[in-house]
Image (cartoon, rainbow, N blue to C red; front, top):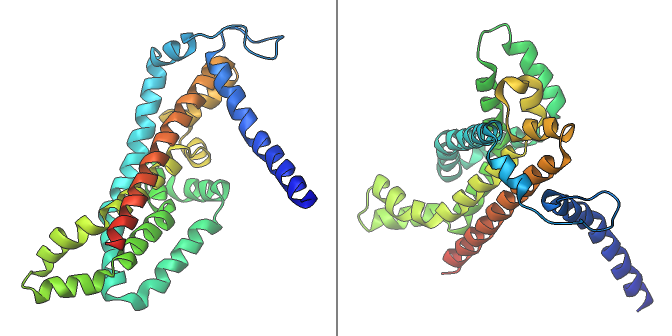
Length: 261
């Protein structure tokens, strides 16, 4: 019992260590004044209102959504069909995708940024397109695992074969039977990829910088000028990630329900 008590105590300390900074940041986003007291001396929506009235923030938020959503869209239209074909018809080549997944994890953001700058600055390709391409490759592990697990959970190859035995063409079997079955897992992988890219800072800051200011670059700039505004940006980011996490959990649960059926 003593060991269990010590374990619970240290777990509580660990949770407080992680949660307290987030709680303090959220409170600071709504604090009218917080200088010499333990708790804020007043609460206000002034900082959030100021943030949403800032055209620079709106543009930065839109750029982040556009860049992250664009990378996920390209991955869904290019990488997902390739994974479908390999997993269903050429499983012997799956090992090469797994090698590519491992290689994605092996390159730190700083090293990758330096390599991209050295290679593509002399070619004339817009660097924002270079970052977009790097993002597409960067989310390969999430897209691959989500797609592969969805196909394996429903035994996609046998499902397609059964549909074709019943008279459906390959296109009909794929569009009307397989996709509706696996799309919750695919959508969950897409949302997870979007959340990862939306919070990315190192690559976009080093390769493009303020020429294409995203939310993360805007946040870093505000840290040196207004702590309240910076905290408000973090609060909005946490709310967005919380909503995405909730939707991913619902989709994952729905995907498991379809599999059990």
